[in-house]
Length: 409
Image (cartoon, rainbow, N blue to C red; front, side):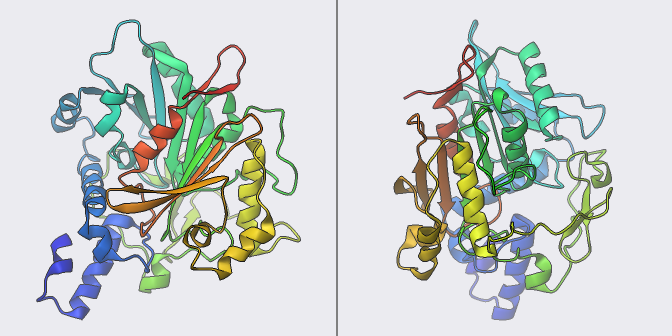
């Protein structure tokens, strides 16, 4: 389907239909402003598509010979545990030949809402995992309590470096990472909540963040054309759904799903399509609409949420008025894109695509927050995401004696 974008014989009408299909097939809720030709025309888009195809291919039989051989060729080994129920199963990828006496860091990566864990398993960590020397877990149940259970199980079965346990996730997996940040911070050395909530529902952004609980250094990666509109922080826009830009409900997937997949039984969300392009709970009545606290406008809301996150990391909060002013200055690319400013700012290029980076440092001098925005990218884990997370994660450990975060060069 990607070749059709460059086919001169395709009419404008046919091309528009193919673009819609491509958004549906590869991105889920893609933002209509994304430049599909540029995205899929380069190495970044090709890698993105390859990861998506690989994840879909192995959903039906996640332990087939082809999968195991794929990991073997990378010097890795795949195992699955607690497979008696679809929603208790978890996958672990480890070095095929671990060094005797060595303890290994662990990266836990949480999938998005509604999907099987295989959708996150093939996002790219395995491509450099053997070289960097860490283990990776992909859980189906991403609740904080179950994540703690998995960490315990990994420690029993494998040579785990308990000072270097990290968690990341994308979309709903990002929100679940924030939940773990709040509920089990002492188990984590760093986290990467991407394209999900800035704060947990239990947190009150109108009050100072508590200082009596451990903090978890955080990297957040968002895409410029995410339909959830996480950036810019200073302009709140209703989430774009397929109903909004196609006039059609979300179509049913015809991909083969693993045995036991049933959204009604999902312990993390239990969400089902509402037939209007969104989701509703299959277990409980929908709760009240979440609104900004009194005295905070919708446009200020996310800046305040991000400031709360900075405060929880013992970082200096941003000036609200300054953040709001960036909305009127599109020529100031980095600040207009984020609706925010950092203590250190720069631009990196990965696979030909610009990644805008903002760093924040806390009162201990630790790089406790890194915020990255990807140019012309959709709501999906992108090719550079695993490496971006790992390069940040590996700087940190939580000292087992003091419980404090240590940043190493």
